[in-house]
Amino acid sequence: MDKSTTFTEFFKAHRSDFDAVLFDIDGTLALDNVSIPGAAELISYLDDINFPYLYLTNDSCHSAEQKSEYLKKKGVPAHRERVLSAGHALKLWSAKHYHGGKYFLLGSMGNPSYVDLAGISYTDDPEQVFECSGVICGEGVYNWQRSIEGAFNLLLRHPEYPIIVSNPDSYWASMRTKGWGIGSGAITRFICQVLYDAGKNVTPVYLGKPSHWIYQCAFPFLKSSFPDLDFSDPKRIIMVGDCLTSDIIGANTNGLSSALVLTGVTSKELLANAPENQRPDMVFASV
Image (cartoon, rainbow, N blue to C red; front, side, top):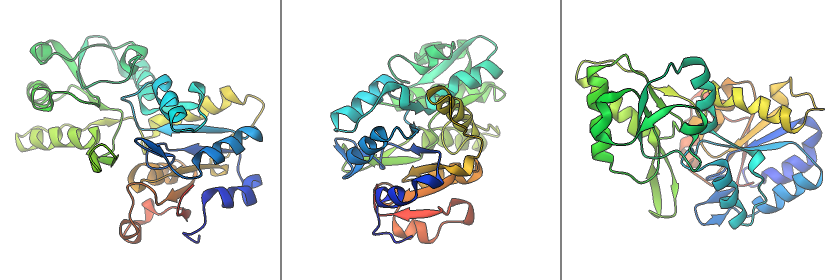
């Protein structure tokens, strides 16, 4: 696909090939304090023709209410019911694997909190870390050193305890830093690497893209919003995002069509050197 073509131009010519669109948010539709050019017009167009779409974000630091307000302030139409965060997948994981007890939370997970919505008891106080039976790596601004050391020491004693991370991303485009922000996925992998150095092998549970957990939530979300439509063919659902290691590999491994936009974390060099499972079906300069 010609990288000068926008996704909007492509979609208007080929919309009959698809049943739904899943949009990443950060780096795809918005960058911190501004919307990506064309994003508001594209979403308005989809609303006008009543075409099924969802916002599928790894951001679990903001609730669906907060994320929809974030988009609205950028001029992008957004309904809370269309926002599906990796944090929502925590409820699905909890229903299958949470057996009670208190978990240690690094950072935060939205307001209202996705941890509360999942029914998991938790604390973010490092002084209580040894009362916990698992770790949840959240996001946002917090005392990284105390929290990381708390999680490390708990898992050093109990490597069998789970460490859950809703957002697997290593980094993200940040206007605040005029560069890149460090993601909770990177923090989790750092903790696990130090544990490995200490002789403990701990494997994190990732809930967000590219994990299957978030996609297991996405299909029921679509069906509940559009009960009369059939979403049985995942290839007719297209994921539009800016990240090879979350949006694109997630779509590819879960059977969806994949479209990369070059407005976020993926450079042309990264794309050129991407392994097969990270190669998008289509590439666009922007939405």
